Length: 468
Image 1: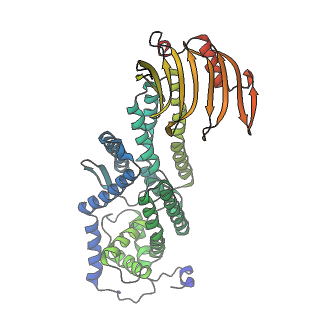
Image 2 (image 1 turned 180 degrees about the vertical axis):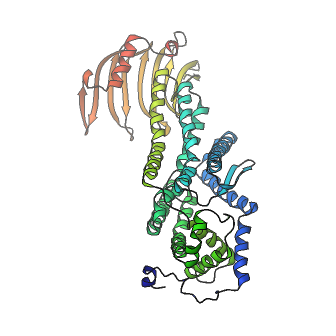
Image 3 (image 1 turned 90 degrees about the horizontal axis):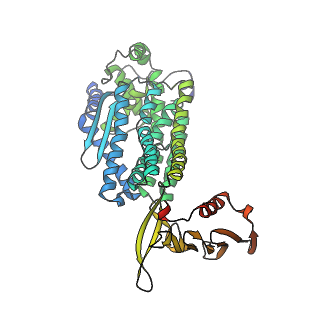
């Protein structure tokens, strides 16, 4: 086919000889194969493969290390996610909508659409992740208010899995969303998007050590030309006489969505062979034919709906950030949430038993301070630990009956002393910090407001579990 032919609106199909390229039964065999591929058994297999790949990715990212409870959480998250897709498909009139409940794994949803407006297809993509993101944000507030690790772990599952699905990579929901609202408008835009998304997925896979993501990205990169050719074929079919003569029927949905008319099927199949020269097996030709058939009546979303959908997409990404800030405020007010504390016994060097309070942030120990067993106030040494290494001390100081007393020292990543603050029975005395290798004195007004608030609180009331 020449460029001039295309520009003049003459497709390769219209220039064919009157007789068909293949025998009549060959066309019918391909159309029958399309019906077979749309069977329930095939839908099960397709969704099982998608679910298996998803679970492998979660395994690589360490989600199964949470034990049986973590696996149950993943199952619940997946059920909520797929239920969102299911409800959206039913709401927008998808055909043959099915949710498959898979024991010990979760669920998968399949459905078929034809002539469905692009904005509805985009909403279907969003309504899988969005409910999970909202639930995850709500659970953050529960965690902030109660300090129960269960809520935090559940919130993490909901937010990570659903935000991950919103990333603009194929075959994730985010990739389908952006293809529907933006890049389906032009096959060259679609090709660029697929290539960029595939490269990004490869980089992310290598960056986080998830080789399966990198493999998916590589597979997407290799197959990026296929949708480009299918979009080109759909454009050529629209220019054919057969389509122009039947376009009214197609647009008015008088043709049964599950059935491709033989005349139209011949046109599409010939175009498949034009863009994908032999050898191409019957199953592949049937799959490409069905894809082109679905592409023919598709129309991109309008400007207003596109802008609205993009705003919703970015708001969903911002929602976890806003929830984290809000729940942190709740946590600070209630003194429970993100910082969890527990009083434990420990053995002193002289063999006696003492008490200390340990503080945890997101499951990792942040600090511990000794307690007077009689007054139940902080009394003795307070130790701060490096967040990602509980065996490394990042700071140390002393308390006396609930008051800051003596030197508090802070160390850098290399274990070098970088700050010394001196207190006297809860009162600030002095602070010295190391700046460019030189020690510099700091006055009260130079202290951060959080440090001054902590000192004032200590001056007002002795600190310890007894006063909480």
